[in-house]
Length: 111
Image (cartoon, rainbow, N blue to C red; front, side, top):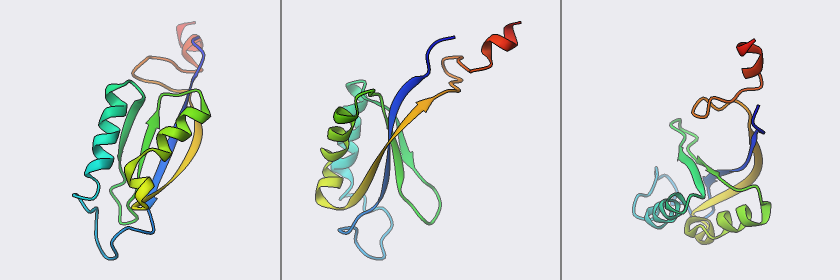
């Protein structure tokens, strides 16, 4: 079985500069979106998206096994730098990967 892939997960929440009473301020998040697009084009972003409930926020999953590099990617985000978003970095390990067909039980299923 292939070794599970280590990645880093960014949990984005509204930051202190988030305009009170507003849903996602589209114009203010433009630089954030462009930044994530660049990470994706460079192969550093596996996926990102928004939570659809009233609490809001979002996640980004970085393709990095190096915490220092992942933290730098998070801190370089223009929305984090401006305080529009606050972010928390968490190490995460993909175990079940439908796209890659990997699972801790893949060998059991083949038997």
